[in-house]
Image 1 (cartoon, helix red, strand yellow):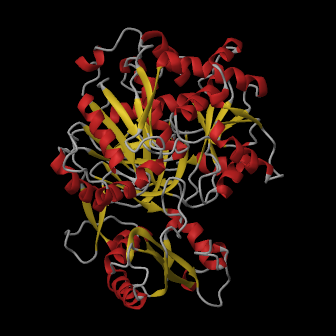
Image 2 (image 1 turned 90 degrees about the vertical axis):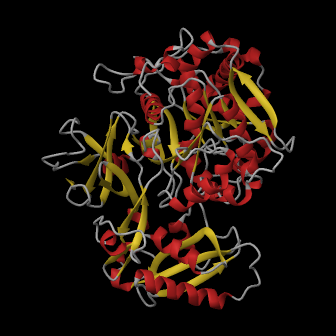
Length: 624
């Protein structure tokens, strides 16, 4: 859609127009002083009675009790909560949100920012299996205050009391603050280049660290998403069950601030228990206009398995946009979901395979708004050697790779040899490096890690068709740790450097091996298998840095599929060994089957392969 189209120009007077955010050359350039708080204030002034956020509470009703707040009400809550925050925290202090999913969480997050503090979106201690991550983030950020709700207050206080090494923040109960408290709020002039919040990484390859996200980075990235995914029509609303402490979840609550629309939220638990709830919410939004949602691979696969509507349900998904990302995109997840929901009007162009990373606020690249998800097939051997060589889909050595399309406007993404800092030509696999205003400022309290990750020096650019064209010569680049390749102008993400399985001098992508494992036996719970290398017997132990590639062996850990707890694993283990040997040329040293829920995952639902490996080596895997 062209900028300034009829839908865009029909914006209510006073609201932000997308052309206000563009420079003369079409680059993203936010108006001076633009922050999400300034945008919320514009919404309050111009569309006060419009719904801002809707939360479907499935603890009170099987169908979801809808709790709504309009912009005027939301503004009053921000001032009331912000005033209470200002009693205990000053400018630049950290304020953590340890609350359940809901509108109180959204209000607490924005109120902390409005008060001039740095918000730290985390989660209530009830989240199972993630106490260590919460402890790490709280020790790292040292919040002066914690925002929670009456329902979670006891758990929060018990958690803080059980960890004497933590700084003891003041606990503020969001839903016990009256609107009248807002009379004491003191307005704060927010610097666009100051830190808005700390986004803690998911911890899939290392302990979580806090990315410093500035106000400018947030606003820039939301504009980039709106332009890339074609969300210029203001009659576009969001639906999300994603956790609000996750970068993708936060982006889903950012759209309403930009456009004065609304997002419908639900809890991750409500989605997992009954994925039909997500589909029904999307259908309700589709009847009103365009509706956008986002999720990783497993969510689409799970919904296709367990989320089909009943025949009596009135489900029309004809106006839905589905962002899929947060890990290398699975064409199987897309195909399975498309097949399941095509009868409900889902367009072939609904899926938008995308690439994003917390260090860049979130969004980096996606396919064109009118395009269908597409896949190329690359030679497995060549890919492991750093070259993308196309083969026929039916080739025994074919690996499917889904296009993530083009990078966002005013963002540069180059493929680099990480050792030499040299830009690689299209067709060569290397590390993805990024530069743009949406990139975070660094890691909180970690100057050396910040220098290494956010201070990449691009020492050599391609003489022709460089993907760095237009960026300043001495710009610092974000080293993402992700491997990617350009083919015909499109970006493909092949995996994480830290996850590579290195055996006998060859690199193997774990997700490729895991797909083979899933196909080898019905005992394997699809999407719940982890492949990693481990030291051979008698080698040096846990420290990767002291291990040679020839000392490594391949280990497979898989959860059992439903209904297979009593099945003999021996035939499955033999089938897995044979399939991996045939397709990848690797011997499997060990296959471990576990009950459902045993493999560690990140808070966003991704496999935590490094944590799985560590537990395997320490003998604690599967021990609860």
